[in-house]
Length: 556
Image (cartoon, rainbow, N blue to C red; front, side, top):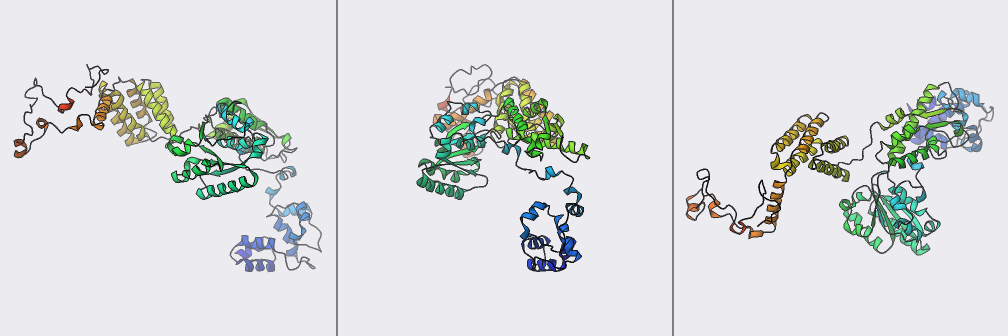
């Protein structure tokens, strides 16, 4: 099979057999590489056979090598001394048609697969969009850069807000910082303690040799466990490095306290729509690194003849549907532009050159690229707790509209409906309580219904329960009562006395003889009787203020 494939590619029998023998005979790819990297026994063929004459054109159909490359590296190719150099037209006939459906100008242009957001990443702080509260003239970051006294910093914010960009741009923001500091980047996703130690060792050697300080940037630092985070403490303490960390998770929950005490936490906010509009317009107008490069058009003369237009309606649509995430916005724009370029190519199959091509990105392209509105939500992260808190507080404030909105945000973000239903059951007792005892029935029924039918059908069931709880009268009397009682027990007020004898059960004769149940009054037989049910030391304590008790009264 391998021999037949090599022969079909135009290699002579002897050369193909030699290649298979040298590479084990099991891989056509390895055999082909061997042929291309090993010189033949003789670089000159005196009496070439028809098969050897056909060898070069057939091989070229698999490797798109220009005539200039053949001239520059003659030793890497087989010389045919007795036959003229094949003409380009002859070689084209032996190549598949897809090698020639593009113009020569296109073939000479490079095409990059680097994402648009990475190509447009600002290199200095002056080019960073948004985060004015951190980058203003008198901010601690600007002042530290100006005086070459960078503290260890932790950048905390949602994805796509500029954490990595700001960290990398710090070094390039002035001539003094680029000379005084060296930037080293690690990712907690792919690195471990060994990588940190290697970086620190190199930083110490560099400081002794050149007096240059290393800025160690660790992206996604919250992915390091406690022991891994501990490894930063001594090197920050002795000044071996300046630590820069970036995280999307709340540092209070995911980073150890000693590390937080050694760093200044700078909070980044989601970008506003006008910030995203500025970034998107920058991507459209930048010829060297912008949108035109994503379409395969170079930055030379050809790109000036290709018009890529993006209307304001497209920019506004993307900016308003990316939840303040610049990376998402630029990705959507890039995919939408590629989609538009493919449509233009399909509509102009007869066009053999890109000269005069107009690629117009429409709102429909952006919608196709976005698929659905991007929502910043993480079922295990801080946004999860932020949204459930907003839902709870909206129902507590009897704002049914706001409560239904936050419910929709959670559902569209992918939240588990049974989690929401469990929270509603809790709310029914905590915030509605005795003011409407049927609220608990509603919440339990909601949970059961969600369990029966699941999403997406249970969304209306959740909405009904949320609306009911929001509109119901509220009482936290039970919630306060159990809280006060638990506090009393926790603090051992009254020494947690034993149960009074008259309240104890007396199932045996011995228990009755020692006083269990003695003096207990059976209330159904004596409705007007009174007796004490609390331990003697707690007589008079009030926990539940309902309905005619004043909750402002002090207990005891």
